[in-house]
Length: 221
Image 1 (cartoon, rainbow, N blue to C red):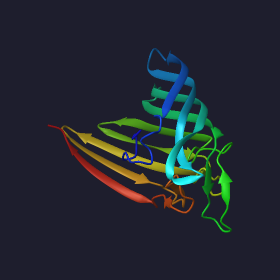
Image 2: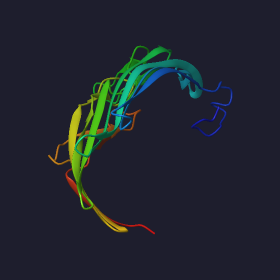
Image 3: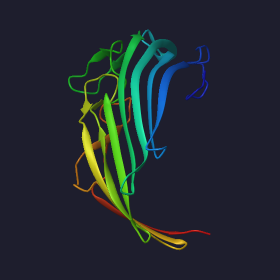
């Protein structure tokens, strides 16, 4: 039982974690195949999730079942007017449906929190993105897009929330023969946001990048 741990006396007797995914989907081709729409409903279940034995902190035991029901929609292709588009939306309903574990929060006052019934860490209920590039001809393309991520809990304690955020990006591409130039302006509005956390600790939080300019020169061989 060493999926992500080194084998030791504390976990060698554990059963392996099991992940089972059930999914049903549909795909539609629109505009004579120029535009593709896909959708999927899924049920993802992880069982035998490990945690520290509350009666013996030196031992790992299989204590949990995590279930996530979700919906994914994606759109890719070309629209009239020489617009290349890519878009997606995801809905995630995650829950620890069975667990004997408790976690100790680092928030003050420090408290012990039962894991059962909590939302898994870093699981936004809603997220979406949209990207579009317009072909202006003569090797020039311009466009941009946005990304939205809903609120997420930093850990399974569910005591600290990373706020939802939306960022806007812009791009310019120029191609001349075998050479190409990409100019990307990320986080156009200089939005302050938090992109992630450690996932098992409430106070190890990663801020997102401020406004940034990225220039790339490409050469094909």
